Amino acid sequence: MTEPIEAPLCLAPRPLRNPRHLRLPPGSCDTHFHVFAHGAPLALPRSYTPRIETISGWLALADSFGIARGVLVQPSVYGLDNTVLLEALAQAPDRLRAIVVISPDISDADLVRLDRAGVRGVRFNLRNKSGIGFDALEALAPRLRRLGWHAQFQVGPETIATVGELARRHDLVGVIDHLAFMPLDPPGAALDDLLHVLETGRVYVKISAPYRLSDTNKHDGYQQALQTLAARSPGRLLWATDWPHTELFSSMPEDDDLVALSLEALPSETHAAIFADNANMLYFSH
Image 1 (cartoon, rainbow, N blue to C red):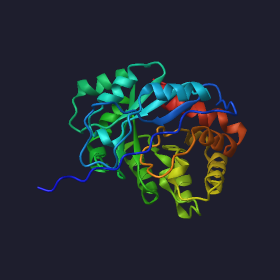
Image 2: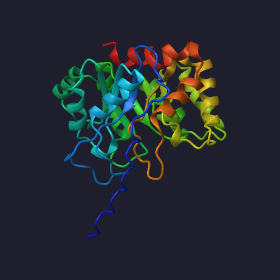
Image 3: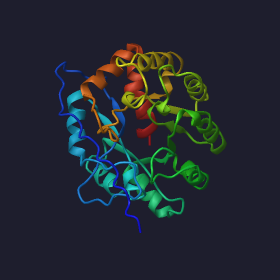
Image 4: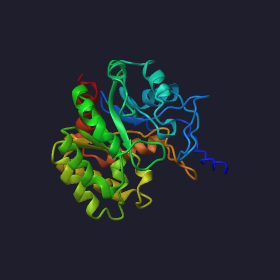
């Protein structure tokens, strides 16, 4: 039998710095970050091998920039085993919420337990190995609706319209990760597709991880896309750090540069909604 090829090891995040003393608006929520633990079994196959980064690292980041709340997202490398995420969630239950990856045959009792722990949605991942896809959504959608949970989608730009249709068909809120990995040099039809699904009032998008999007060195396309989205649908945008920036193997951004980029790209009158209010309504209203 052929041995599995080892997934590449991610770079570690840069040491925390904030020389400009950047502070996010009061109540800001980081809607997408991951944690990893020593000894936790990793899925095979998987897209990457993570560095160990725990909740203490995120809390230090949050305190540096004034992030009040956060949303843990189950990474694909742990498959359906949410143990690491739930242990981190339990360390700050008033401050954290979570998105899990589960099997469609999970018991009702386990769903209730997850809801009480602070879980607010399920991630459907078409881009990484060991995630779950749209077939699982068909079975899980009625159960998500009953709990008031949403469906989070890690998909490419070609699937934006599909997310909108799935949210409509299943009467669910949909959340798209990382601007759907759309190109920004230029965005072409992807930005129009995204604007359309946001305007349905059923879908949010995370304006996170500009380093995952093709763009100029100065992120001109990212800034222009954020300004367009903020002008049309400020109530449907969610900010996130994507810490600790997994699947980066050659270079790693500085966290303060990423915070500054988002603050500068978004009109100041939209800051309260995009950094705080939208997320607090979606994740912390029940």
